Length: 351
Ligand code: PLP
Image 1 (cartoon, helix red, strand yellow):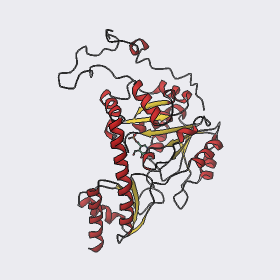
Image 2 (spheres, protein in one colour; image 1 turned 180 degrees about the horizontal axis):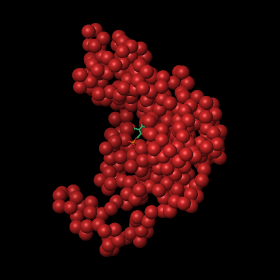
Image 3 (cartoon, helix red, strand yellow; image 1 turned 90 degrees about the vertical axis):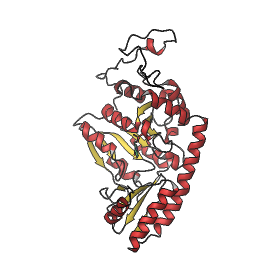
Image 4 (cartoon, protein in one colour; image 1 turned 45 degrees about the vertical axis):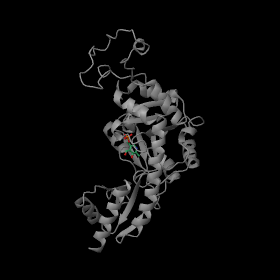
């Protein structure tokens, strides 16, 4: 991995003088309006946001068991995936390895960048095949993605397996562990491997368990050298200031209490839905899930999708994903929303 990348210069969007500005400092370096907008709550919106707000970086570092120098806050983890691809994969030369069926953005970003995408499919039982994944990483592989819990299957990869893969890839490729749904699994984070394994990077997000998909707050946790490189290519202001405020509120004492409650609710509903769906005629299998969704195999997935849609319930058709030709992905909603899914599917089955 070329961490130096002398061809990439830091964008000097936010001067250090400005970062250290105190209340009395006159800010005339960024062509902002000196006047705030007229509407209530608009104070401060005339100013560009801090590119990496210190309070949020420190809070996220604590939340994810890391340190501020190992944290990059991004516009959703989607942006972190894009940055990793652009930083490490040269068009026409480098590539990534993924384990399909998995989250689509890894391959999308790679293809836009002109990087090769090598596939190391999940095993037939839906588990990650560590040996296949490592074997798929060739000399031009720069990034290896491992999504745990995996979207859209919900399967989890243990920390021991992740560590073995990191060891096997040492000095060759960065192992990017996407933990977007980790709060629903409750297992230890791969961030704790970063001390011993310099080639581990972890993606986290506030979009799922923290109820902030609309605020777009993602985090990459990695060695300071990796973070330093990405800081040089990240667009100047990834996070609008209202999103930073929302994130800090969500991560405050009351926000954390509510988050625990919401996660608990999802876990209860996930167990209830998995058991109930398994008894619906026409349901072939409910894949065991450690996330806030269930992949469900149907005898007639297109029919089930249409019946749900006609009843005003939108689920995800994942029949194009390899190995999931008969499956729909159903997010865990509120109790009432989940009851509606069950009612529609039961009614359809008896029709
Ligand atoms: N990673 C996985 C596995 C996801 O499923 C998603 C969103 O669905 C993301 C990343 C992107 O999340 P964000 O909202 O942080 O961009």
